Image 1 (spheres, rainbow, N blue to C red):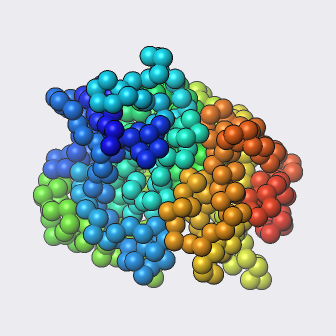
Image 2 (image 1 turned 180 degrees about the vertical axis):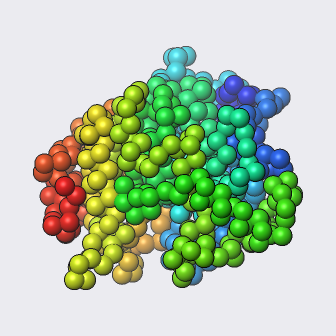
Image 3 (image 1 turned 30 degrees about the vertical axis):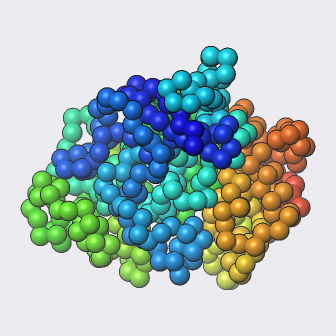
Length: 480
């Protein structure tokens, strides 16, 4: 197998050419110091340079998290081995690049100069409690073959990423939302290092799905991310609704942290930092919801370990932050959802697609903030193999064009749709517009930008094309 080396600001790393030798993968590249010991519950700290060549041939251990069983729905869908190594030392990223040729230390760019290819930085979902870069649907090879440098990043989850406490203090760094600070540090690492992999640091798109999509929203809302990236893709993230509609205040999150330390029987942050990671995770999994939350019966982790308005990284609710005065960055957006995901009972029992309505609110706020009109999509594929339909995040197999790794019995039109969606995503990552030709000059369906006066979406299905957002939705409930 051909190995290829590049030299980052911190030292040399070695990746491996794939079966398609035009794509090189670097897996398990560190982007911050290990957040262990006294760095637990601290903003990510800079890496120390290393000597020699760091072999980045395989994925790093995944972050500390509860593991799905193979017989659970998403455990089967993403097929993450329950025995996958977990570690608190988990701040690593992976890169797929089509730019390198040659082998070993002699690898480089044909012609000598960097091709400065567009870059995708991907943030996985998992309700802020679980998720990994090694899930097989996140295979970056197909996008790389379309001329995109793909980066998937890890970040701290659950109690490791979203605990805070009044005794966590720092003169300048945020003392909450550590998982989102990890994401920001990874984007900054990409900004400063991606040129040696053939990427363009001035043409970065940050994307994610579910909580990863909500994380992209947070990065867009934070003034501290200004200048780091140019475009955003938010898939199945709920927009300005669902779990993004209202964030906890810092005080609320800190009170929950005090309650947690009390349950551990420790009297200080230092004592809590000394608890082994596996024991801390077990305690976080069993920790009940706040007694005054009114959310008994829900998954406690999704109530306890969530983002908050910390006053430094996030200074307000998402909608208000997007509309704040003095914004420097104007970004392009591609946003959408699967058919009817996050559906809740409405008036008279009418199903309300809360996720889609939240995305419509986001699209309108995006334009009101002075950004270009976004491109809105609706994924409407009844997934074969069971009766799950167009379930939450089912579009991932199609946007990454990774159907060949899935257990489902796809047929020809599914593969054609996957090629089309991957082409649209690549076009957007490249130039902020999904329209144009696909790989090999294939024509793509015309996709109109979102119009608040006449909301439409690109419907991706057996037949793809523009359709009103009132179709298969609830017209009377569309946000004004």
